[in-house]
Image 1 (cartoon, one colour):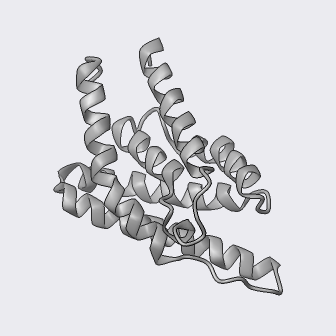
Image 2 (tube, rainbow, N blue to C red):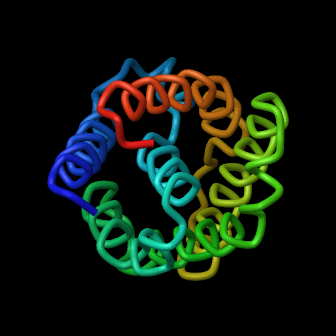
Amino acid sequence: MNIRSFILVATALFLAFMFEHLPMPDVLLWLQPSWVLLIITLLVLQAPSVFGLWVALPFGLMLDVEHHSLLGTHIVTLAVHVFLLQILYRRMMMFHFLQQTGVVFLLVAIQQLLMYWSVALVSENMAPIALWGPALTSALVWPWVSAISHAVLVRMHLT
């Protein structure tokens, strides 16, 4: 991994964490995409030998702190997400972008469901969570994120 790739990854993750914490109106708060999850999905699909299960620990801790959740919940959900991506890697590379969008929708929905279950296990009062909203908007944003990343990689001669 050369310095240009490192700077590109660091910039993408910085933007993802910034967009994840972007203040939104209450009406649109249920439809905010999982930006960090999308970027981690993109990183695992672009370089599976470099970005493995180890990315779950630092980025999961950062997400736990950012979302004021219990330490470790995002680590577990990111580890499951990356594990499923590594299992589905060869199929995802052969899929059409609409099929990839469907897989991203399912993976984000699984992540939201795992977050809901982890909160339900440790908390007595359950607040409703957005299960389908972030999954749907993440799936709708995925083709754009994938196309922009591919264009940037071609432009920087990194593919």
